[in-house]
Length: 492
View 1: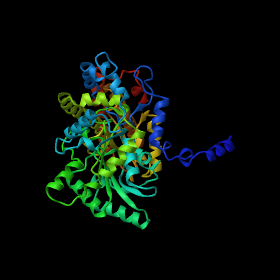
View 2: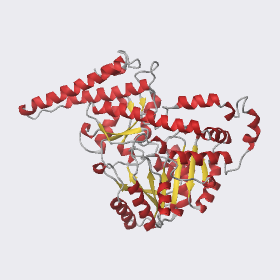
View 3: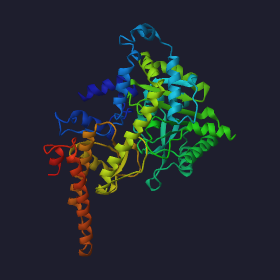
View 4: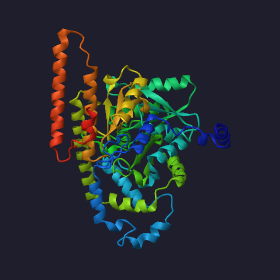
């Protein structure tokens, strides 16, 4: 059997027989654990809860209501069937004009109308995944590289590297300053690439950050723009979480910085700037595969548009999205209400964790938390992090993503997605985490001497008291887990 497999690999390309997709990463292993034992409130209450998927499901009722009121937006309804033929046969890779206009307008709204977007520069792609790969093909040759601040989204290893042959080189960021991107760190990464004889073609940033849930402030963005201009390298700005900012400070787009630089007559080569956007996170439509490339470089726009033939957005989807995003009243209400709900979910989760001594990186955006569990590690290594992660997956039954899969240089961080579940599942997940942490504290509490005994005992009793009050509040809620829930059993 092994010989047969080896012979088969010889018949295939390196891409087909290799592991460039990264599917063996713990990031994807967690998904497999969930898929084999998915949580369900009644059918499988002991199953794994999916907290590794960054989806925005908190405002689907608003979308559902809009669809009910605007059935002509779909060509598969009585109200919209008259446009079926024209939409079905449309195949221009520029996209429907009304779609490009609506997307450009939506991008402006999301950015507080502080930047303008030309619909003629809108290039569509099959989700942000396809958009990233297309831009990588346009900007770099195999073996060349992009600098990326770490930690970063594990899917970038697939999106930008797998089929393009491009390298991703880390810009080291540290928790001591909130993982901020500094000029010193960028310079070190660039110099290291030169020492290794690797040509750097650009820098990739995510703003807001996945997995951190933080935004890049104006000064940091200016520093980045100055850096890429001095080095004459490209800047790819992934802004797919732009509308998930739920509290101050406000989101600042790279497009706003570009226009600001122009007004101040500061030299900035706009040909180096490219934005990746989608509707997967801000609207919660990952299944629609609406990815957007917005480049200030004419040649990149032309090339990317030709390459988009390999991953177009269906005209049926374009037609629906154009109608939805053109409804200003709906868009304004959706954006404000979505941010409000994200803020509530974020506060509930972070408060619940802090009551048992678990802290998260301070954040104000995204669909996740960057949770710090380094105190629960047996030692401060990636191996210990993976050991803890396996316990959380298989015993606590939560699919959270370990920081090492995001190339985080410090062990003990975990990304926890909080917007892809209903209120009841969220409460079950949070109580599981809290119960696990409290049980771990009881087992590992070390008292060095009698003098500190009362201090440790008091701290534990106070923590337990807060935990019980919190869980009592949950139990009094109409959505609380019942006594037969795995939460109760998890304490035993």
